[in-house]
Length: 172
Length: 172
Image (cartoon, rainbow over all chains, first blue to last red):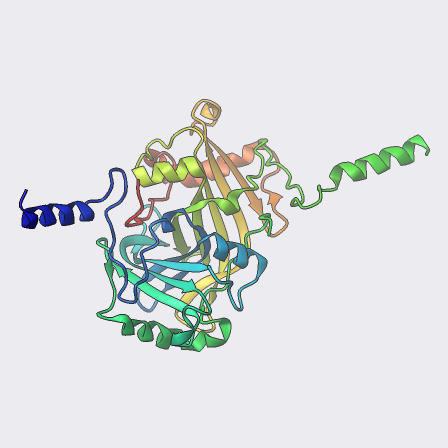
C-alpha cells in the first residue's frame, strides 16, 4: 500500500465509531468533551421558560446529584457536572393543558473545577451542543463569555440558576 | 418488666427505622410498596400542567427507561415502573419567566405487570403518596379506579400519558 493511501485509510479508521458505541460528538471550542453518559444522570430540577417556549430538565452527574440532595451547592464540589436538556414546548394532544417536550433544542453543561476554570472567573467550564446533530456551540473558546454574562444574576449562587427540587423519602 | 410494658417497648422498636435508612413509608391500600429508590431513576419526560399549576418529572426504573429509549412502550414491558413527581409551580426570582418547582405535592407510580394487574383491566398497578410525609392515597384498594378513569383517554397508549422525550447522543 502506498503511504498516501495508507494514511487516508488510517484517518478513516480513526473516525469510525466502535461497534455498539454512539458516533463521536465533536468537543466544544474550549476543549470540553461531550458527556456521552448524560442520559444516565438523575434529575435535579426542571423548568418551563415561558419567554422562549422551552421545557428544561436539569440533570446532574453522580457528584452533582449527591451535592444537590445534601444541599452542598454553594459552591458545588469539584467534579460536579450540571446538564440542562432543552426542548421546544408542545401542547399535549390528550391533555391540552399539559405542556410537554417536543423537538430537542440543545443540551448545555457546566463542569465544576475551581482550579481548572479559575481563569474565566467562575470556576466552571461551559459547553453547549445544538440540535439533534449535537453541533458544538461557538466559533472559539470565547463563546463561554456569553454563558457567563447570562448567568451573572446568579453569581452569588455559584453561577447556578437551579435550586434542587425536593424529593421526599430519598436518602441524602 | 411487666408484659404490657414489654409489648409497648417492642412495638416502639418495630417502628424505629434502622440507623442510616429513611423512615418507612406505608404501602398503598392495594399493597404496593413505596419505591424508595425512585430518586435514583432517570428522567423520561416532564410536563407543566397549566390548569393546576404544577410541574412534573416523569421518571422510570431501569426497565422503563430502557423501554422508553428503544420506543418499546405499547405495551411497556413487565417490570417497568413509571413515576410522576409533582411540585407546585413557582416563578423563579432570578429569572421571572422561568417556572420552576416549589413545594412537593405528591409522587404517583404505575407498576407494569400484565398478569398480576389484569384484574383492574389495565395491566398496571397504581399508587400515589401525598405530601412531604408521603401519606398513601386512598381509603381502600378501590382508589385505583380514580387513576384509571383519568387515564382512560390514553387507553390505546397502554394507559400512559407520557411520550418519552428525545435525548440525542444517548445509546438505545
